[in-house]
Length: 299
Image (cartoon, rainbow, N blue to C red; front, side, top):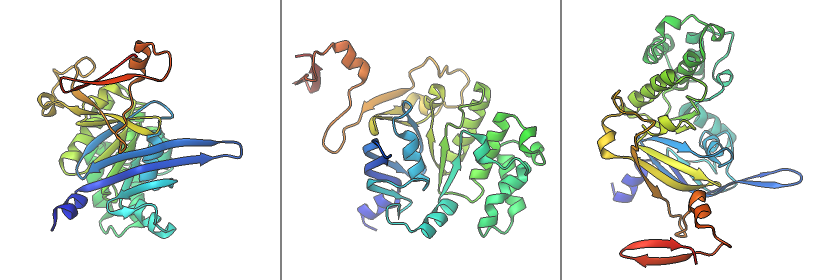
């Protein structure tokens, strides 16, 4: 196998110059503006960004729930631009699992936890549905709730069942949209521990989150601003093996190194707070090279 093919095989998500335009009768909204991102197999990656930054749009596209307007999007070797509707149905069944923030989208309220977990298997060729469902409900620590319906569980328990449902058909890629957005910090830590254990077993996971504490525990954090990747944070080596240690104050310690991201045209986004502090009179800055450093200053 040549190097190029090996590299392609190792990639789960490849987005190049991804554009998404939403059109209404009166206006057009540019949700993604040439987004570039690569996620390798086996990675646990968090996407962060303000509301309207494009992160949920990107997650929906990877999940096959929305179509890109332009660019390139390959997931598990499948081109989401050229898929037929039938291929898209199979892709959503076999390739991706989705955990929604709104538990009403994750579960059917009139079914028990076990029945909800088994439901996606009815669309696949899984032969041992009950055994697989039992294995998954034990994985999320809720075997004692297997006969409970949605109204008999807390929000955190519902979210843990949602993870089991998303894993029912053994997806290549697990997508989670604000999985800890509506639970307390203790439950959020438990949910993250589940994701960590899944990732250790080889599961590729992509999480959209506003949870600063959660994002500080993730090895790779990608920040989206104005529909493009603006920066990445990577877990420092001294913290990489200490994710579960209780003596780390994730809210206070700086656990990650942050990097600005250059796009294909060698452009980067300068954080808004830096621009504000420079008190620019217009949109011009001076760029100079000093001691192997690029210095951006006010004219």
